[in-house]
Length: 274
Image (cartoon, rainbow, N blue to C red; front, side, top):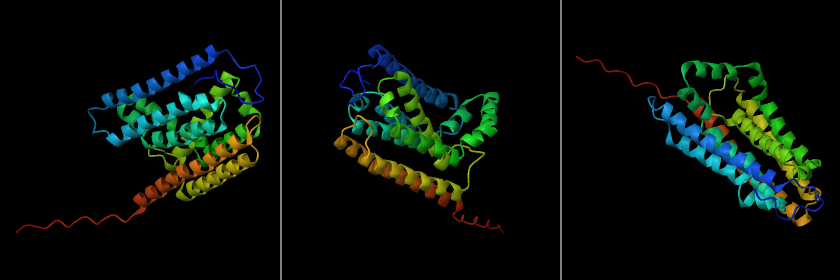
């Protein structure tokens, strides 16, 4: 991200040292590289098992590319002075990347690749009460929607543009909450606490309503320091772009429900000889 451009109006001259922002970029690059290498190492470690579906790996690496687009390069550089660019980065990092990564089944690959003892530890962690609470759709949806309302209806949006720590925490939350919520609704990894279809459907509809309401509120009340036209364009991008991703999640939810409940073909009778 480039933080040397013109800041948003009202941010003041107290922006942090550019070297700190550059260091943050380095951390992001390293994290993305570690994730990419970890996936490749997982494929190699599980090479003796049944073949890993290629489309899962494609989804994983596309997810990393979308996360990178929201954190590095021209979009976050423009986001420093453009609310519309900020919202485009938000869509990549908080909505598109989580959907792609969740559908790549990273936990399933880890369970296949890890040694037996480590895989059992991971399984116990997934079954723990803490994970059960955090991964419940209601909790995940509240963290996701609540975080967005907090970001855009308080001074946090202005603060994160001058504070590298706040910037890092906000973007970590956007990604983590987006991933957690998507996994709780349309995850394909083993989930010992999977919520019922009615619960997941209801929470998803409520989240879509909260996301759309926030976009409409931003259209009328852009964050402090954002020009009216820029704020309205960003709000429209949040509304229509978010709807497109939410529609894809809805399709995945009901496609999974149909696949799990459709009648199975009866086995063909075995004809006796003689």
